[in-house]
Length: 334
Image (cartoon, rainbow, N blue to C red; front, side, top):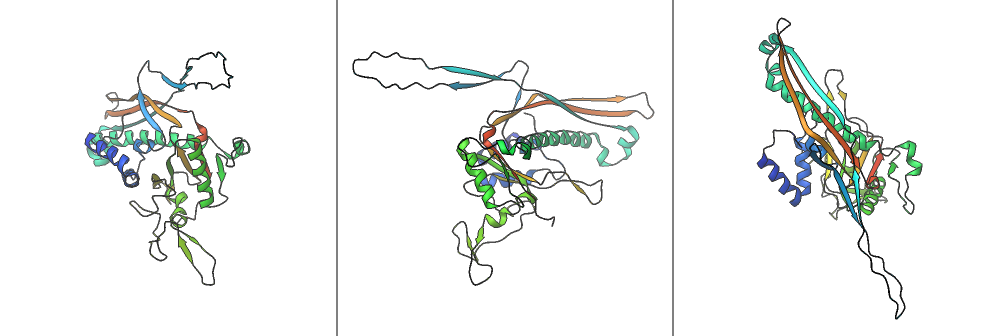
């Protein structure tokens, strides 16, 4: 998959090594790397596997059957059996997204750095990448909803794939989601949400209140003595909040991005849910990678410079049991 060119191959190799060695540090780097204006496709890899496919490629998921064990009596002649291979071909419904810009040459020559071709190209590509990431996030966020919550509890399971925290995020709701995902998948891949949605984690992820005669008594949840931890703000880049919880080290707190064309600035990222995503639940693909076209229309005076990029993409989800959506009412805006 073609992604942001600001990372070199050496950077990606180093990040891949870090991801294996220190998931907490990797999550912090990803949080810091998110463009302050646009989200990048690097974030998409935190949801599920991503790859680029070419013309003629087909995704085949293979399941191997089990040998049957039989009860026998002495002297019985039993039949042997071969392993049954079941090939399941999964196809993708592809959508196309496009972004473009056009400016007359007077603006290009005199409008300042924001109108330079290299800046416009970068911003248009970043806008397309952000839209792809938001499509994935919103798609996963709408798999489980209030409308079908009643039918989401799997037979024998005490937890639904849709959990309503009935307020801000709580330890109970997050614990239930983690346990559910850990049972139905190889493990939790990521806990992801906006800083505002995940803000309560900075409190209950570090300590819990206990009853007593004195006010504000607590015990820490990680074994630290009382009064020895920093109750830091969950807002801001870097390690300013809990980055590890119940064995999950890949907690991605996405910093809010704003539409500054309005006053007050309008937040663009959803703050009313948190996703707990399991390993190997699906895949996001682009078909052929982003395409571009660039030309100058000489008919108008002054001529118009045009730039556009587009990409085909799709997503397959083959283990929806491994995804839990927690509906939250986020804390008040600071």
